[in-house]
Amino acid sequence: MKTIYTGIKQLLAFTGENSPRSGHAQRETGLIENAAVLVSGDKIIAAGPRRIVESLPEAADAEAIETGGICLPAFIDSHTHAVFAEPRLKDFSMRTAGASYAEIKQAGGGINSSIGAVRAASAEDLEKSLLIRAGSFIKAGTGTAEVKSGYGLDRDSELKMLKAIKSASEKTPLTMIPTLLAAHSVPPEFAGHADDYLDYIEKEIFPSVEKEGLAKFADIFCEKGYFSPAQAKRYLNSARKHGMLPKAHVEQMSRSGGTAAAAACGAISADHADYCAAEDIAAMKDSGTIAALLPASNYFLGLKKFPPAREFIQAGIPVAIATDFNPGTCPCLNMQFVISCACVNCGLAPEEALCAATINGAKALGLEDRGMIMPGMRADLAFFDYDDYRELAYFFGDNACVRTVIAGVTVYEAGNKHAKGISASCSREAK
Image (cartoon, rainbow, N blue to C red; front, side, top):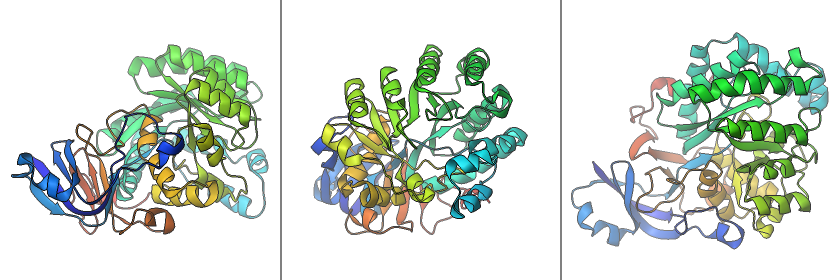
Protein backbone atom coordinates (compact mmCIF):
# COMPACT_ATOMS: atom_id res chain seq x y z
CA MET A 1 0.00 0.00 0.00
CA LYS A 2 1.38 3.36 -1.08
CA THR A 3 0.16 6.78 -0.03
CA ILE A 4 1.19 10.24 -1.18
CA TYR A 5 0.47 13.17 1.12
CA THR A 6 0.20 16.35 -0.94
CA GLY A 7 -0.65 20.01 -0.51
CA ILE A 8 1.71 20.38 2.45
CA LYS A 9 2.35 24.09 2.84
CA GLN A 10 5.51 23.54 4.87
CA LEU A 11 7.38 20.28 5.40
CA LEU A 12 10.00 20.16 8.15
CA ALA A 13 12.07 17.15 7.10
CA PHE A 14 15.16 17.60 9.34
CA THR A 15 17.27 16.12 6.56
CA GLY A 16 20.98 15.65 7.07
CA GLU A 17 23.06 13.33 9.18
CA ASN A 18 21.17 10.82 11.27
CA SER A 19 22.74 11.99 14.51
CA PRO A 20 21.95 14.33 17.41
CA ARG A 21 21.78 17.97 16.34
CA SER A 22 23.65 20.58 18.35
CA GLY A 23 24.69 24.20 18.10
CA HIS A 24 23.62 25.93 14.91
CA ALA A 25 22.59 22.61 13.34
CA GLN A 26 19.67 22.47 15.76
CA ARG A 27 18.07 25.30 13.75
CA GLU A 28 18.26 23.47 10.43
CA THR A 29 14.76 22.17 9.79
CA GLY A 30 15.09 21.09 6.15
CA LEU A 31 12.09 23.29 5.31
CA ILE A 32 10.34 22.55 2.00
CA GLU A 33 7.30 24.54 0.87
CA ASN A 34 4.46 23.11 -1.26
CA ALA A 35 5.71 19.64 -0.47
CA ALA A 36 4.64 16.02 -0.68
CA VAL A 37 5.61 12.81 1.13
CA LEU A 38 5.38 9.39 -0.52
CA VAL A 39 4.99 6.39 1.76
CA SER A 40 5.10 2.68 0.97
CA GLY A 41 4.12 0.33 3.75
CA ASP A 42 5.70 1.66 6.92
CA LYS A 43 8.56 3.52 5.21
CA ILE A 44 9.05 6.89 3.57
CA ILE A 45 10.25 6.46 -0.01
CA ALA A 46 10.33 10.11 -1.08
CA ALA A 47 9.83 13.60 0.36
CA GLY A 48 10.33 16.96 -1.29
CA PRO A 49 8.68 19.51 -3.58
CA ARG A 50 5.25 18.32 -4.67
CA ARG A 51 5.91 18.45 -8.39
CA ILE A 52 8.99 16.25 -8.02
CA VAL A 53 7.44 13.66 -5.70
CA GLU A 54 4.25 13.41 -7.77
CA SER A 55 6.29 12.81 -10.94
CA LEU A 56 8.04 9.75 -9.51
CA PRO A 57 7.01 6.41 -11.09
CA GLU A 58 6.35 5.02 -7.60
CA ALA A 59 3.69 7.71 -7.05
CA ALA A 60 1.58 6.65 -10.03
CA ASP A 61 -0.52 4.10 -8.17
CA ALA A 62 -0.37 5.70 -4.70
CA GLU A 63 -3.49 6.77 -2.83
CA ALA A 64 -3.46 10.58 -2.78
CA ILE A 65 -4.36 12.46 0.40
CA GLU A 66 -4.48 16.26 0.18
CA THR A 67 -3.53 17.46 3.64
CA GLY A 68 -2.68 21.15 3.63
CA GLY A 69 -1.09 22.70 6.70
CA ILE A 70 2.35 21.79 7.96
CA CYS A 71 3.97 18.38 8.36
CA LEU A 72 6.85 17.25 10.53
CA PRO A 73 8.04 13.98 12.06
CA ALA A 74 5.62 12.74 14.68
CA PHE A 75 6.80 13.95 18.07
CA ILE A 76 9.15 11.75 20.10
CA ASP A 77 8.50 12.27 23.79
CA SER A 78 11.64 10.98 25.48
CA HIS A 79 10.56 11.30 29.13
CA THR A 80 7.18 10.35 30.58
CA HIS A 81 5.73 8.65 33.66
CA ALA A 82 2.53 7.65 31.89
CA VAL A 83 1.77 4.59 34.04
CA PHE A 84 0.08 5.60 37.29
CA ALA A 85 -3.08 4.82 39.19
CA GLU A 86 -4.34 8.20 40.44
CA PRO A 87 -3.67 11.92 39.93
CA ARG A 88 -2.06 13.68 42.89
CA LEU A 89 -4.77 16.25 43.49
CA LYS A 90 -3.90 16.72 47.17
CA ASP A 91 -0.35 17.68 46.18
CA PHE A 92 -1.73 20.20 43.72
CA SER A 93 -3.99 21.78 46.33
CA MET A 94 -1.14 22.00 48.84
CA ARG A 95 1.24 23.50 46.30
CA THR A 96 -1.22 26.15 45.12
CA ALA A 97 -1.72 27.06 48.79
CA GLY A 98 2.02 27.69 49.09
CA ALA A 99 3.56 24.39 50.23
CA SER A 100 7.02 23.55 48.93
CA TYR A 101 8.02 20.27 47.25
CA ALA A 102 9.82 19.23 50.46
CA GLU A 103 6.79 20.11 52.61
CA ILE A 104 4.50 18.10 50.35
CA LYS A 105 6.84 15.11 50.59
CA GLN A 106 7.01 15.45 54.39
CA ALA A 107 3.20 15.44 54.54
CA GLY A 108 3.12 12.10 52.71
CA GLY A 109 2.74 13.51 49.23
CA GLY A 110 5.09 13.51 46.27
CA ILE A 111 6.37 10.32 44.65
CA ASN A 112 5.63 8.18 47.67
CA SER A 113 1.93 9.10 47.60
CA SER A 114 1.62 7.29 44.26
CA ILE A 115 3.12 4.08 45.62
CA GLY A 116 0.11 2.79 47.53
CA ALA A 117 -2.26 3.37 44.62
CA VAL A 118 -0.01 1.57 42.14
CA ARG A 119 0.67 -1.31 44.51
CA ALA A 120 -3.08 -1.75 45.01
CA ALA A 121 -3.97 -1.45 41.32
CA SER A 122 -4.24 -4.48 39.07
CA ALA A 123 -2.04 -4.84 36.02
CA GLU A 124 -5.22 -4.75 33.93
CA ASP A 125 -6.27 -1.38 35.38
CA LEU A 126 -2.82 0.10 34.82
CA GLU A 127 -2.85 -1.13 31.23
CA LYS A 128 -6.34 0.22 30.59
CA SER A 129 -5.49 3.70 31.80
CA LEU A 130 -2.21 3.68 29.86
CA LEU A 131 -4.07 2.79 26.66
CA ILE A 132 -6.41 5.74 27.17
CA ARG A 133 -3.43 8.04 27.63
CA ALA A 134 -1.74 6.53 24.58
CA GLY A 135 -4.71 7.65 22.52
CA SER A 136 -4.31 11.18 23.86
CA PHE A 137 -0.61 11.21 22.99
CA ILE A 138 -1.45 10.17 19.43
CA LYS A 139 -4.16 12.81 19.05
CA ALA A 140 -1.61 15.49 19.95
CA GLY A 141 0.86 14.31 17.27
CA THR A 142 3.16 12.04 19.29
CA GLY A 143 4.27 8.79 17.66
CA THR A 144 6.78 7.55 20.22
CA ALA A 145 6.91 7.96 24.00
CA GLU A 146 9.31 6.67 26.60
CA VAL A 147 7.34 5.32 29.61
CA LYS A 148 8.88 4.79 33.04
CA SER A 149 8.01 2.63 35.97
CA GLY A 150 8.87 4.09 39.37
CA TYR A 151 5.62 4.25 41.33
CA GLY A 152 5.81 0.68 42.61
CA LEU A 153 9.27 0.57 44.21
CA ASP A 154 9.14 -3.10 45.06
CA ARG A 155 9.85 -6.06 42.83
CA ASP A 156 6.28 -7.13 42.11
CA SER A 157 4.94 -3.62 41.57
CA GLU A 158 7.79 -2.47 39.32
CA LEU A 159 7.38 -5.63 37.23
CA LYS A 160 3.63 -5.04 37.15
CA MET A 161 4.16 -1.54 35.73
CA LEU A 162 6.65 -2.71 33.12
CA LYS A 163 4.38 -5.57 32.08
CA ALA A 164 1.50 -3.10 31.72
CA ILE A 165 3.69 -1.07 29.36
CA LYS A 166 4.61 -4.16 27.37
CA SER A 167 1.03 -5.38 27.10
CA ALA A 168 -0.36 -1.95 26.20
CA SER A 169 2.34 -1.54 23.54
CA GLU A 170 0.85 -4.48 21.70
CA LYS A 171 -2.58 -2.82 21.58
CA THR A 172 -1.80 0.74 20.50
CA PRO A 173 0.03 2.19 17.51
CA LEU A 174 1.98 4.47 19.86
CA THR A 175 5.52 3.17 20.28
CA MET A 176 6.27 3.00 24.00
CA ILE A 177 9.88 2.60 25.11
CA PRO A 178 10.07 1.05 28.62
CA THR A 179 12.36 2.43 31.32
CA LEU A 180 12.93 0.97 34.79
CA LEU A 181 12.86 3.77 37.37
CA ALA A 182 13.18 1.59 40.45
CA ALA A 183 15.30 4.32 42.08
CA HIS A 184 12.65 7.03 41.83
CA SER A 185 12.53 7.41 45.60
CA VAL A 186 13.29 5.37 48.69
CA PRO A 187 10.05 3.51 49.54
CA PRO A 188 8.59 3.74 53.07
CA GLU A 189 9.77 0.28 54.11
CA PHE A 190 13.39 1.37 53.44
CA ALA A 191 13.06 4.91 54.83
CA GLY A 192 16.47 6.20 55.86
CA HIS A 193 18.23 3.21 54.30
CA ALA A 194 18.82 4.09 50.65
CA ASP A 195 21.83 1.79 50.29
CA ASP A 196 19.82 -1.15 51.60
CA TYR A 197 17.14 -0.36 49.03
CA LEU A 198 19.77 -0.33 46.28
CA ASP A 199 20.92 -3.75 47.52
CA TYR A 200 17.33 -4.92 47.13
CA ILE A 201 17.09 -3.47 43.60
CA GLU A 202 20.30 -5.19 42.55
CA LYS A 203 19.33 -8.55 44.02
CA GLU A 204 15.59 -8.66 43.32
CA ILE A 205 14.53 -6.19 40.62
CA PHE A 206 17.38 -5.98 38.09
CA PRO A 207 17.67 -9.76 37.53
CA SER A 208 13.89 -10.13 37.06
CA VAL A 209 13.68 -7.25 34.61
CA GLU A 210 16.64 -8.59 32.64
CA LYS A 211 15.26 -12.13 32.57
CA GLU A 212 11.95 -10.97 31.09
CA GLY A 213 13.42 -8.26 28.86
CA LEU A 214 11.10 -5.60 30.23
CA ALA A 215 13.19 -2.41 30.02
CA LYS A 216 15.53 -0.74 27.54
CA PHE A 217 16.71 1.92 29.99
CA ALA A 218 17.26 2.34 33.72
CA ASP A 219 16.73 5.73 35.34
CA ILE A 220 17.38 7.21 38.79
CA PHE A 221 16.32 10.40 40.59
CA CYS A 222 19.58 11.94 41.78
CA GLU A 223 18.60 14.75 44.12
CA LYS A 224 19.12 15.81 47.72
CA GLY A 225 16.82 13.73 49.90
CA TYR A 226 16.58 10.98 47.27
CA PHE A 227 19.76 9.43 45.82
CA SER A 228 23.31 10.75 45.88
CA PRO A 229 25.72 10.94 42.91
CA ALA A 230 27.65 7.96 44.33
CA GLN A 231 24.44 5.96 44.61
CA ALA A 232 23.48 7.02 41.09
CA LYS A 233 26.76 5.66 39.73
CA ARG A 234 26.27 2.41 41.61
CA TYR A 235 22.72 1.99 40.31
CA LEU A 236 23.42 2.94 36.69
CA ASN A 237 26.57 0.84 36.39
CA SER A 238 24.75 -2.14 37.87
CA ALA A 239 21.79 -1.62 35.53
CA ARG A 240 24.13 -1.65 32.53
CA LYS A 241 25.44 -5.05 33.63
CA HIS A 242 21.84 -6.24 33.46
CA GLY A 243 21.37 -4.99 29.90
CA MET A 244 19.77 -1.60 30.57
CA LEU A 245 21.16 1.69 29.25
CA PRO A 246 21.53 4.56 31.74
CA LYS A 247 19.43 7.71 31.96
CA ALA A 248 19.04 10.01 34.96
CA HIS A 249 16.92 12.73 36.53
CA VAL A 250 19.50 15.37 37.47
CA GLU A 251 19.81 18.89 38.93
CA GLN A 252 16.04 19.38 39.01
CA MET A 253 15.66 21.20 42.32
CA SER A 254 19.30 21.91 43.17
CA ARG A 255 22.79 21.22 41.95
CA SER A 256 23.47 17.85 43.50
CA GLY A 257 26.11 16.38 41.18
CA GLY A 258 23.82 14.04 39.29
CA THR A 259 24.85 15.26 35.86
CA ALA A 260 28.51 14.44 36.34
CA ALA A 261 27.55 11.04 37.76
CA ALA A 262 25.27 10.30 34.82
CA ALA A 263 27.90 11.43 32.31
CA ALA A 264 30.52 9.25 34.01
CA CYS A 265 28.22 6.26 33.46
CA GLY A 266 27.71 7.14 29.79
CA ALA A 267 24.07 8.12 30.21
CA ILE A 268 22.28 8.65 26.92
CA SER A 269 20.49 11.65 28.42
CA ALA A 270 20.53 13.82 31.53
CA ASP A 271 16.95 14.92 32.18
CA HIS A 272 15.62 18.13 33.77
CA ALA A 273 19.12 19.66 34.17
CA ASP A 274 17.72 22.91 35.58
CA TYR A 275 20.68 23.67 37.83
CA CYS A 276 23.50 22.48 35.59
CA ALA A 277 26.71 24.49 35.91
CA ALA A 278 29.57 24.90 33.45
CA GLU A 279 31.36 21.83 34.85
CA ASP A 280 28.24 19.71 34.31
CA ILE A 281 27.88 20.91 30.74
CA ALA A 282 31.53 20.09 30.09
CA ALA A 283 31.01 16.58 31.46
CA MET A 284 28.00 16.08 29.16
CA LYS A 285 30.03 17.32 26.20
CA ASP A 286 32.79 14.80 26.93
CA SER A 287 30.36 11.89 27.32
CA GLY A 288 28.05 12.74 24.42
CA THR A 289 25.09 12.96 26.80
CA ILE A 290 21.96 14.70 25.51
CA ALA A 291 20.23 17.35 27.65
CA ALA A 292 16.54 16.36 27.87
CA LEU A 293 14.71 19.44 29.14
CA LEU A 294 11.25 19.28 30.74
CA PRO A 295 10.01 22.88 31.02
CA ALA A 296 6.33 22.03 31.41
CA SER A 297 7.16 20.66 34.86
CA ASN A 298 8.68 23.99 35.86
CA TYR A 299 5.58 25.74 34.55
CA PHE A 300 3.19 23.51 36.49
CA LEU A 301 5.24 23.82 39.69
CA GLY A 302 5.20 27.59 39.36
CA LEU A 303 8.97 27.82 39.32
CA LYS A 304 10.90 30.86 38.17
CA LYS A 305 13.93 28.73 37.35
CA PHE A 306 13.96 26.98 33.95
CA PRO A 307 16.64 24.82 32.29
CA PRO A 308 19.56 26.83 30.80
CA ALA A 309 18.80 25.81 27.23
CA ARG A 310 20.87 28.54 25.58
CA GLU A 311 23.93 27.50 27.55
CA PHE A 312 23.53 23.94 26.29
CA ILE A 313 23.06 25.11 22.71
CA GLN A 314 26.09 27.42 22.88
CA ALA A 315 28.22 24.64 24.33
CA GLY A 316 27.29 22.27 21.50
CA ILE A 317 25.17 19.95 23.66
CA PRO A 318 22.21 18.39 21.77
CA VAL A 319 18.96 19.46 23.42
CA ALA A 320 15.81 17.35 23.48
CA ILE A 321 12.52 18.37 25.06
CA ALA A 322 9.86 16.10 26.53
CA THR A 323 6.63 16.39 28.47
CA ASP A 324 7.59 14.67 31.76
CA PHE A 325 3.91 13.66 31.81
CA ASN A 326 3.18 12.40 35.33
CA PRO A 327 0.47 12.59 38.00
CA GLY A 328 2.24 14.97 40.36
CA THR A 329 4.37 17.62 38.68
CA CYS A 330 3.30 17.66 35.03
CA PRO A 331 -0.12 16.33 34.01
CA CYS A 332 0.45 17.48 30.41
CA LEU A 333 1.05 15.10 27.51
CA ASN A 334 0.81 17.59 24.63
CA MET A 335 4.22 18.26 23.11
CA GLN A 336 2.79 21.32 21.38
CA PHE A 337 2.58 23.08 24.75
CA VAL A 338 6.10 21.93 25.66
CA ILE A 339 7.43 23.46 22.44
CA SER A 340 5.84 26.81 23.30
CA CYS A 341 7.09 26.60 26.88
CA ALA A 342 10.63 25.81 25.73
CA CYS A 343 10.63 28.87 23.49
CA VAL A 344 9.06 31.29 25.95
CA ASN A 345 10.75 30.12 29.16
CA CYS A 346 14.00 28.48 28.04
CA GLY A 347 14.97 30.75 25.16
CA LEU A 348 14.90 28.16 22.40
CA ALA A 349 14.11 29.35 18.90
CA PRO A 350 11.07 27.63 17.33
CA GLU A 351 13.38 25.72 14.99
CA GLU A 352 15.49 24.49 17.91
CA ALA A 353 12.44 23.44 19.90
CA LEU A 354 10.99 21.48 16.97
CA CYS A 355 14.32 19.74 16.43
CA ALA A 356 14.37 18.95 20.16
CA ALA A 357 10.90 17.42 19.93
CA THR A 358 11.70 15.21 16.93
CA ILE A 359 15.15 14.03 15.88
CA ASN A 360 16.88 14.88 19.16
CA GLY A 361 14.07 13.17 21.03
CA ALA A 362 14.76 10.09 18.91
CA LYS A 363 18.44 10.21 19.78
CA ALA A 364 17.64 10.56 23.49
CA LEU A 365 15.97 7.15 23.11
CA GLY A 366 18.64 5.59 20.90
CA LEU A 367 16.28 5.41 17.90
CA GLU A 368 17.70 5.53 14.38
CA ASP A 369 14.60 5.04 12.24
CA ARG A 370 12.49 8.11 13.04
CA GLY A 371 12.63 11.82 13.77
CA MET A 372 13.42 12.72 10.12
CA ILE A 373 11.36 12.71 6.93
CA MET A 374 13.56 11.15 4.30
CA PRO A 375 13.75 7.89 2.32
CA GLY A 376 14.18 4.80 4.46
CA MET A 377 12.88 6.33 7.67
CA ARG A 378 9.77 5.00 9.38
CA ALA A 379 6.69 6.86 8.21
CA ASP A 380 5.78 8.61 11.47
CA LEU A 381 4.22 11.93 10.51
CA ALA A 382 2.18 14.61 12.22
CA PHE A 383 0.10 17.21 10.38
CA PHE A 384 -1.04 20.51 11.89
CA ASP A 385 -3.63 23.04 10.78
CA TYR A 386 -1.21 25.94 10.48
CA ASP A 387 0.28 27.93 7.59
CA ASP A 388 3.67 28.52 9.24
CA TYR A 389 5.62 26.10 11.47
CA ARG A 390 6.36 28.88 13.95
CA GLU A 391 2.69 28.90 14.89
CA LEU A 392 3.31 25.62 16.73
CA ALA A 393 5.30 27.62 19.29
CA TYR A 394 3.30 30.85 19.01
CA PHE A 395 -0.15 29.45 19.73
CA PHE A 396 -0.53 27.35 22.87
CA GLY A 397 -3.20 25.72 25.00
CA ASP A 398 -4.90 23.88 22.14
CA ASN A 399 -4.34 20.88 19.90
CA ALA A 400 -3.77 21.79 16.26
CA CYS A 401 -2.93 18.24 15.15
CA VAL A 402 -5.29 17.09 12.42
CA ARG A 403 -3.62 13.83 11.39
CA THR A 404 -1.11 11.44 12.94
CA VAL A 405 0.51 8.72 10.85
CA ILE A 406 2.47 5.96 12.60
CA ALA A 407 4.34 3.32 10.59
CA GLY A 408 2.53 4.46 7.46
CA VAL A 409 -0.99 4.18 8.88
CA THR A 410 -3.27 7.10 9.71
CA VAL A 411 -4.03 6.41 13.37
CA TYR A 412 -5.69 9.74 14.11
CA GLU A 413 -7.62 12.10 11.88
CA ALA A 414 -9.51 15.05 13.33
CA GLY A 415 -13.22 14.40 13.17
CA ASN A 416 -12.77 10.73 12.24
CA LYS A 417 -13.50 8.43 15.18
CA HIS A 418 -12.80 5.40 12.99
CA ALA A 419 -9.20 6.17 12.04
CA LYS A 420 -7.15 2.98 12.27
CA GLY A 421 -5.65 2.31 15.66
CA ILE A 422 -7.82 4.69 17.70
CA SER A 423 -10.71 3.15 19.58
CA ALA A 424 -13.46 5.01 21.35
CA SER A 425 -11.79 4.19 24.67
CA CYS A 426 -8.68 6.07 23.55
CA SER A 427 -10.50 9.30 22.78
CA ARG A 428 -10.24 10.86 26.22
CA GLU A 429 -7.83 11.11 29.11
CA ALA A 430 -8.27 8.85 32.09
CA LYS A 431 -10.46 10.33 34.81
